[in-house]
Every structure is written in C-alpha cells, then in structure tokens.
Length: 328
Ligand SMILES: C[S@@+](CC[C@H](N)C(=O)[O-])C[C@H]1O[C@@H](n2cnc3c(N)ncnc32)[C@H](O)[C@@H]1O
Image (cartoon, rainbow, N blue to C red):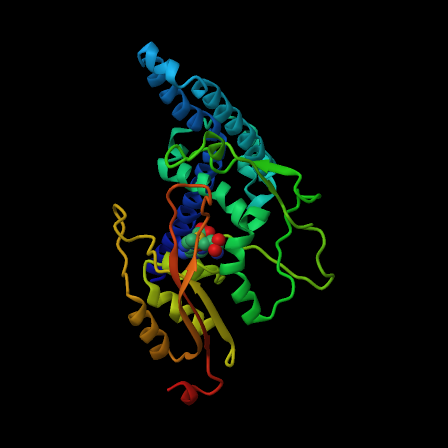
C-alpha cells in the first residue's frame, strides 16, 4: 500500500541530487573559465601575431610599434590572470565548494565535462569591466548616474561590500580594456590600467550588515540596478518583488530593458515594452511614487572607445500599499 509514496520520495531525492550535481558542474565550469583565462586570451593575440607575420615586409615596416604593442597586450593579460588567480585561490571557502579545492591553483581545467564555453569567457571579461564600474575611480561617473539616485531614494549613507582581500586603497591593478581589439584611437587605450578598490573596504560602520547569496533571483531575492531585464519572465520578477516587500515597503528600480534572453539561441523569454511592464507593476498592486525616463546611463563603458553605448534608462520608485485597497 505504501509503495507509491516511497517511490515519490526516492524520485524527490534523486531530483535533489541531480540539481546539486548540476550546480556543482556549473560552478566548476565558472572556475575553469578563470583558470583558462590566460591561455584563452593569449590565443587571440597569437592569431593576430600569426597574421601580422604573414604581412608583406613593407607593410610591417609601416607599423614599427605593432609587435611591441602585442607584447604589451600579452603582458596585460598575464597581469589580469594574476588577479583572477587571487580571486579563486580561496575557492574552497566560497559556497562550501570543497570539491573544487584540489584544482584551485591550476592553469587549465582537466575535465571535459566542465570546459568553459565562449559565453563563460565573455562573462569573465565583463566581470573585469565590472571592477571598473563598481570599485575604481574610473567607474565614478557611471556610479554617479546609476547608483547615486537609487542610494538617495533609499537614504542609505554607506553602501559597500567587504572584499576580504582588499586591505588597502587601490592596491590592485587590472587591464579591463585589453580584450577590446576594435575602436581604439590609440594603442595605449587598449592597455590602459585601472586600480581598485577606490575605497577602504574595511572602513565600514560598526552596525553595517551585509550578506551575499548566490542563486536565481526568484529563489534568493536580491534586486540590484540594471536587473529586471535579466528575467525570462519579467512578470514573475514583479510578482516576487511584490510578495517579498513588507506592506508600505518601496521598490526602487533603475535601468534599461535589454532583455538578456531575447534572441539567444535555445532560450525564450517575454520581452515587454516599458509601458506594459509599468501596467503589470500597477496591476500587481504597486503605487508609482516617482518615475523618470531617458536617464542617459552607461554600463561598463570604455570612455576612450570610438564606440560607446548609452541607455536611456528608466528610474522609478513604487510602494506596496499598506492596505490592499489603497493600491487598487
Ligand atoms: C546587467 S548586470 C547588473 C549588475 C549590477 N547591478 C550593475 O548595475 O552593475 C545583471 C546582473 O544580474 C545577475 N542576474 C541575472 N539573472 C539573474 C537571476 N535570475 N538571478 C540572480 N541574478 C541574476 C547577473 O549575474 C548580473 O550580475
């Protein structure tokens, strides 16, 4: 009589094991993208070098500094790699992924199953640019546009995340634009250094309390800026934000609608125009308290590039009514 129940339980346990092993595999793949960074990026330089070597001599003579520039690019990649190695050196303590400790210092991944994809390497390059946005003086202009108005709305006086390894201001250097092979006005723009962190990360008020959670927003609930367009189903995000907010609580949003999954192979999502997102938010029960459109804002932008992107972002503040009827 009890057999079907036992079967369901066994299936549930198997599902959990499946999810765990998928998560472990995913995390190992991300780690492997860090480990492969130097080899992957140097391959790009080698391709250019090989093409350069095949040029007619009189062409090479016209660009006498080019080889030296490529050597400089290679050196920057090695420097970036040193910082990336630092990030993953204590990986056994992150998210309790003890199974990764054994391989933490290796240059190249060993298992084929967890080989990084090109998209993983792209994300890693964008992580390097994210250091500029969040932790350097070079990112100040972007932060002033994207973060300051949000911080002002939520009246937080000090917002920082403790980077355990950063003991001094600006004691790390990265070359975030070294992967940009096009739209450089000058060679030195490609190999330009940035230093971080531009603040003392240990200088936090005593009562400051921060936590970090890895996972899907719909499971871990964290809502930063430039975020709502990361959804497959943006309505589910709005619904979750409404559900987790206390009555009377505020939702402050800022960013564009660059839907992450739009036109991505093997992915589908619902890409609503802002007017529809707005109406979903209201229908969910939120009350708009403030709304500003066309805020010119950038995202990990290289200011020296000949190509730049500017988003006309939307910022809004919504309130979850105390009484249900207030919002209707
Ligand atoms: C465009 S970035 C914005 C990052 C940061 N808020 C900023 O403004 O610089 C979007 C961020 O959302 C994260 N993200 C995307 N989908 C997510 C999901 N379903 N759950 C949690 N985080 C997600 C990405 O990893 C990325 O860090």
